[in-house]
Image (cartoon, rainbow, N blue to C red; front, top):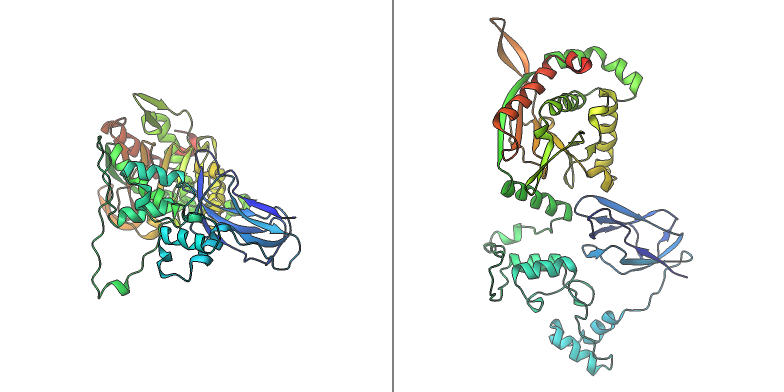
Length: 424
């Protein structure tokens, strides 16, 4: 008896995923709950475990293909011997049409199948995937203008993107539509062999789309300040060993920054709000997103109710989310609901930057490299560990005075960290 491997529920507003990697080959033994396949959504990467022990009987969806919730990815059969699944109809058609040189077209493939007595099965018998159909409609392209790479020639979202990149012509329309992507100029004969074309992952596509949408939608502006990190660094050096021994986590800078941000958000609530049509939604809580770089792209897990946490609790949660992000174990719930974001480019050596908003949020704080610089303190020139701070904000909802005041409050809390303990 075969057990089907299905796409699980992917979370709120997530309806499809791309098959990233199969961990097993057909015929290999499988233990119950062992990860079988990796799925990439536009938010997180998840692993689908085996519902039963046995052997991988069949892989019905290949790597790179897009599937919806509930779709069958493959089957698990009893025992550990290699299964011998029956060929699918589209495989039979391909085998029947293989000897003919004209089988590269759908019409020739169908004709070859008829001659071989395999039945009049069209190479494309499935409608385009929902995401592909949406792109086709937006670009005003007929499905017949795109070559499908899915099962039975189904047109997938990636096929439409490839067609647009190659300059697929659009049909005339009565109403204006979004212009298709401009075709990339072909590489020279000398450069082409030294180039490599790789399909963007769904996560990378989502990052690109959201960042561009934020620039196109929000009236984004950035204000800067600098903070003397000596007080925080001295406090950290004094108590880091005791802190780690008691709480089981290292005392970093993110705990101080997150706490300083939550204090400033209480005074300047507009930075913690968002626009919904003609309304402004003020959040009486602080879910702080912490940008984490991974080998698959930037993700922003959320520390929920950070305003009600101690610095130790914040550091523990950030540590948990950071490990989950690097291991690809973040859940959809870990990524949703953020009201404000902190991005620490300083860990990579960035001295100054203008971070892009994480829509629909109205503010994002950029931390940078701590660098010793000469500063005037009490009329004397001294060397101080200084850090530039950058606050990007949506000027539609946050006034310049509010943005500057917010950044000054963060600076004051960090230069006098006792204010964080006393809630001042």
